[in-house]
Amino acid sequence: MNTQFLCYMVIILLRTGLMDVGVTQIPKNLVTKKGENVTFKCDPIKGQTWVYWYQQLLEKEITFLISFQSGTAVDDSGMHKPRFSANYSQNSLYVLSIQPTEPGDSGVYFCASSS
Ligand SMILES: *[C@@H]1O[C@H](CO)[C@@H](O)[C@H](O)[C@H]1NC(C)=O
Ligand SMILES: *[C@@H]1O[C@H](CO)[C@@H](O)[C@H](O)[C@H]1NC(C)=O
Image (cartoon, rainbow, N blue to C red; front, side):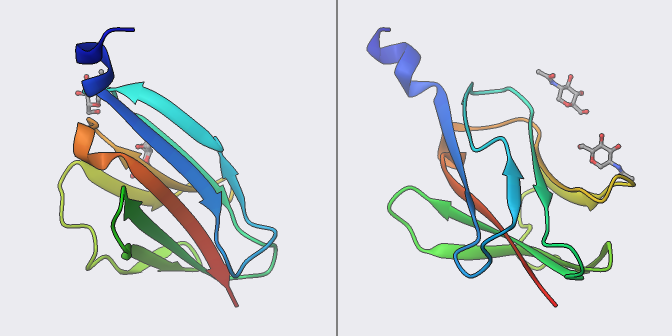
C-alpha cells in the first residue's frame, strides 16, 4: 500500500459500551475507503430499552451521538453531520450509518444500552 492510499482509508472500530457487557456490535471493526457507505449494527442487552451511540474520533474524547428509547429517537443532538443517520429496524437491531465516510470519521463507535 502506498501512502496516498493510506490517507484515504477510514478506520472504524466498534466496541461494546464500556458499562454494558452484553451489547453486540456488528462488525467489530471495519476498514473502508473514503466515500464508501458504512452501516454498524447494535444488538442491545435483552430487556434494555434505552440505546445510545457514541463516537470517539482518533485522539479525541468520547462524544454522544443519539439516544433511543424503545426504538424511537429521543435525543439526536449529537448528530451534527447530515452524513450520519441512525434508526431502529424491525429485527431489533439499532443501525448507525455514515453515507459517505470521510477520513475524519476514523475512530471508535460505541453502542450502549440501559434499562
Ligand atoms: C451511499 O448511499 C447514498 C444514499 O443512499 C447513495 O446515493 C450512494 O450511491 C451510496 N454510495 C455508495 C458508494 O454506495
Ligand atoms: C434505517 O437505516 C438503514 C441503513 O441506512 C436503511 O437501509 C433503512 O431504510 C432505514 N430505515 C428507516 C425506517 O429509516
